[in-house]
Length: 262
Image (tube, rainbow, N blue to C red; front, side, top):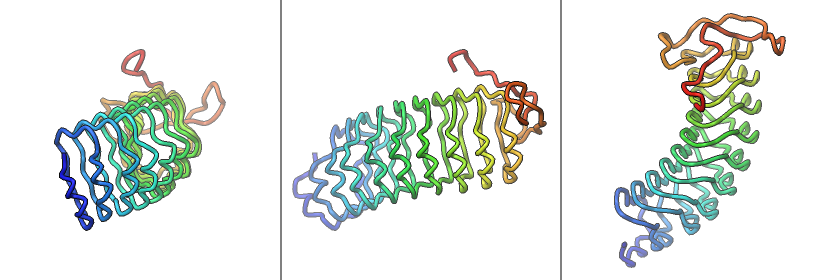
């Protein structure tokens, strides 16, 4: 418990309450109007209360490594928030209002129990790093294509079976982690990711790659298998017998998942 007299600290800018035994966010924080950076990681929180939205100056919030099951809608009024760290919690969904956080540059929601990302995720127009790995997401919303400032995207260890073609609009993406999913095909539009340098596609069910991958001139590493000896393995073009389209392939295709349910 924090003393009630803390409400006088209206000029306080940084507060670290990490690695304690808090089960809820102390209400006295609502009065700390000058707070810019707040750590409450490694506690026992089960939800993020709506009053956190009253912290209009907040730019950094770390509540990772808790037991958070819900983030209340009020967080959407943290209009200056740039870094939101929700890793290693028990979230099954994000608030629909999350798209209102127009200044977010880093969003980490990895190691949760998310089954989907809300359509409003497309509102995060400033986000540069988005990590939703180690969840249960089966599909990405088409609105995710609106995140044109993305540089790093991680969705590994989910249940993705396909990707929306809209991700081709990620013109600034440099790192893309998609390994350990259930992907069988990739959209041709991925060839428009002209700045892509590293992509991990291992442990999927891909039969081949789109021919448009020949346009990815800045690629320095493309991982197709866990035991790949070099970061880039030569690809050959051939005609897909099912679609009659030109595709890229090599001896690593078709991919075999690690396990039948993998």
